[in-house]
Structures are given as C-alpha cells and as structure tokens.
Length: 92
Image (cartoon, rainbow, N blue to C red; front, side):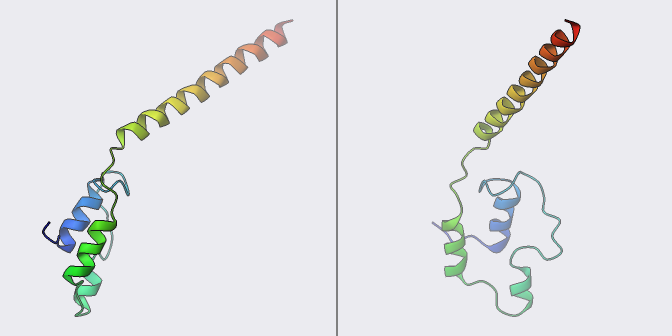
C-alpha cells in the first residue's frame, strides 16, 4: 500500500471517507500537515502511514444516519401521542 500524502489524508477526512466527520470541506486556517511543512519538518512517510492506518476503515455513515432518523421519528411520535393524551384529558 503506497504511503498517502498529507493532502490525500486531509481529502479523505474532508470527504467523510474515514468516518471522522461528515463530508464537508474543512475551513481550517492551517490545513492538516501545513504547519509542520511550513516549520521545515514535514510528516515522514512513517508518520503518514501510521495516520492512514489509524483512520477507521470508512464505515458507511448511512446506517448511522438512518438510525438517527428513526430516533427522531420515535421522539416526534411520542410527543404527538402525549399531545393527544393531554388534549383528551383536558376535554373530560
């Protein structure tokens, strides 16, 4: 497996492939690896390899998103039922 560059690591994170965040560009003032490179000590191939190996395998967020939607729908349903019960009790 080739060792990824800092740009490739950042791109994988920004696109949500590592499951560390949602797929959205990061408006960081100093993107990943830039500060080290500017300081004259860029990440070594071994450090980049370790960083790539430490990242999650890119588990799909779709399963998490759908379970999050189910929780939201269950909460809305519970609130609707509670509202119906309160209205019914108030009418009696």
